[in-house]
Image (cartoon, rainbow, N blue to C red; front, side):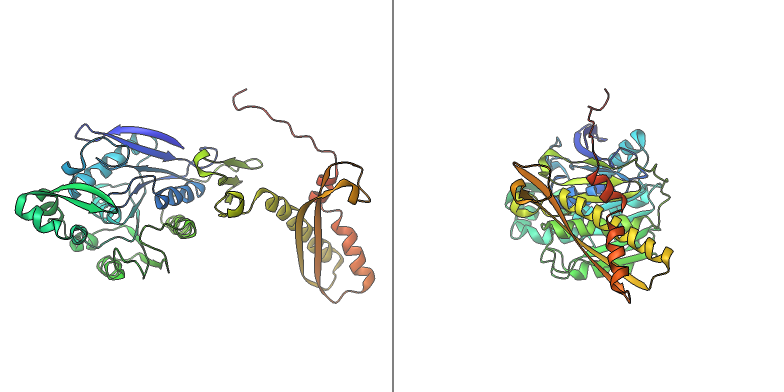
Length: 400
């Protein structure tokens, strides 16, 4: 992850975050536009860009003018200036990496990516989350402030617990951007994600977008998610869906398989890590009672999975070779630390030892001798042999 700054066409410095896949080898590029009055560091933005990065995208998320860490005054902005900021972000990405093939937008950011897509020839796919079908939809959240703005030219309005100064030209500009005609000529693959219980932007807005757009288009329900996708499970799911969907429509460069595994994690994300094993993107975490967010297996669960999967592979291979009537093999592996004095067959006599317990179920008409032999074969699976052999771990700092 890299923090960046770039100037928009008005000379205002905008703050952004570039998220790269583990190892830095990206297959395509994307720009993420955050929700109205939010920032690039809202959970939905972080989780979705992380999911895209794990799938091989280099993703730029940035703060619009006057929001987050970007310079400028929010009162000077409107929907048209947001489109300009988006185009300038795409230009920066094209100059330093590659022009974006994918645009993703949340709430009004989704409306913005739909509107700006026609300006960007490189874009082939657009995904929206909880997006209104028209920028004018946001005006209903101004309440009585809307009348004051129209009468007096400006007013302070409270949005998401924060106060913003909004001027009349913001309202006038929002009303100048009906999207129905633009959606009809979008000519990009479209994915609409929306929650049917969204109380900020109703599901009818998603319906309007979907009906107005031409094929190819897809719709995914976010079930009981709130508008901000504040639950980690909802934002991570949305990111995974977008990544899988976009791959169908983009020309993705084939990644170089990673030797072993590459793991990266942000200090601010507690225990959450992204794992790249060859072309496969995974997530590691710790459960909530240990300070994590439980978005993936913990390291010892990965260790247990390695032994269990190797066991199943080895036994199925043996069954095929011996033509045994085996239909399926299941293996449950658990890890715990036990006192060395309680372990009768351990070399250590003090402290703790690590114990992996394995329960193997073999489905098939086997006699007792065949099952006993299968159990012996399990002890010969490569990971089992590795764990019981002498192991050395050699570490060095990158660049040394």
